[in-house]
Image (cartoon, rainbow, N blue to C red; front, side, top):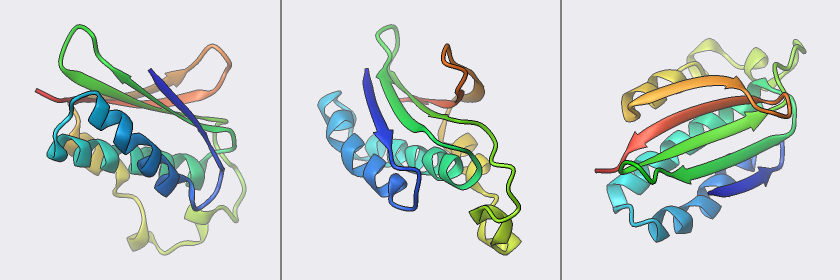
Length: 127
């Protein structure tokens, strides 16, 4: 398992991709699989930074029972301020992340972790 606390800001998606790439490669994923995983990571982290309160933490886990990787991003819950990034952007500049994650993954969902943070996760098949 790999865990990475991220800054709650615009550099978080790039940091998450940069730190995740060598982990995914060490787990034996091919270039196309790594690319798909990095897109999913970027979308989930961007969602957390754009719509949720800190903290933002990325978790990656290679499945021992199947050939897959689970991506999970924990955050502090909805950011209810009218001036958050997504609220001030034109509609055509956001709103596609869930479709992208769904297209690249077998399953996705959300829930609460033991610390009360919200987890948004997606499972990628790597076979």
